[in-house]
Image (tube, rainbow, N blue to C red; front, side, top):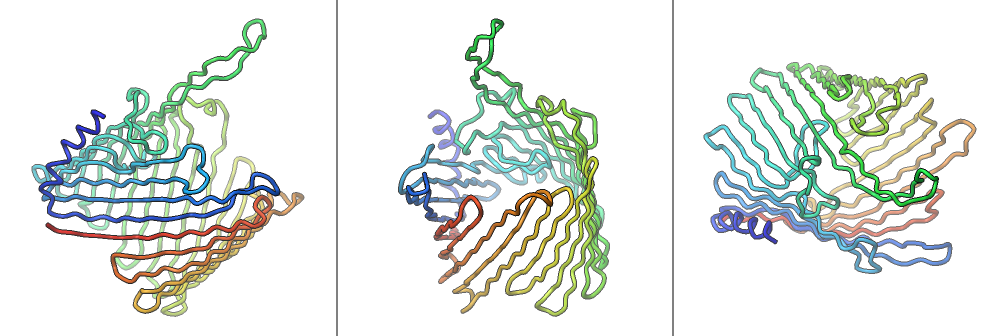
Length: 421
């Protein structure tokens, strides 16, 4: 209660002197049938209410995004849930160089990206920025609670960005993330081999990385980017990525992608004692624009494991009306065939947009195992009578070896607003 009162006191001045209020409201309903046995089932109607609000006044902003979900018919375990994704104050251009954010906010920094409760400070000058963040992890279901053990449940990160050289973008970052593990009770044997109920206390999971990222754009030719992550806890390279695009030809674009990846394991995890092998992956592809409307795409990828390999290729067509793709995987990763078709077209200046999607997937892990199939069908329509209001209705059908016939209905209303006063 004290936290809520303090939040209200801090927020009131912004609400009173706000010059702009904008955001969105949405309400959706999701209906499905759940079978408890081969003959007994129950209908479920799940509702979601989402609100995003921004109050702005000069250099100040108050931003929030929340969601409320529950079952209108036949409540599920844990209902209802009220989630707070964003709730923070922002002050920009302090001394013309600083931006401060305080509260629950999204933080983007490589392996430490996520939503946290904390303080973000960013200094920017002449194409160079230095930022630092410290905060606690958000509890399960995004509850409006602050961690009760900040010492073992926090993130500390920093980032240095250079964007002052033409065509060059450089980022250097550091992340120290600790995730408090939940204690639990389990049955164990005492010295006399009698079963007893014991409290299992685990250390916090910790990740500590330094990273670098660079992107260089060649005028009218293409671009090349690279990323490197180094695991300080295990003193080893964790990830290296390289991505290059060649776009100088009029109708053809080429792309090459490579990555080297080690398993990302926390320092205190039991899995750190195992000797995992790394993977390397290379993929090349091209896009060919056969007309102003249609583009043909193709990619081939090769993956190397510790002592085996797998391959994949994808071909497809993109257009103003939708997409078509076929994907084939074979080798150590199993045998997979997947076809996907999706199309949408707007009519009457965006007033009506029907859409339809179909996908079929067949998969088996080895040549001797039975083949599993998955069929998915989507059909829907979006109606937008005004720019600030839209309605969505979609039917979803799924069939696989677990759910023979699964039919669901989804409906949603969206409302956007922007008011100056």
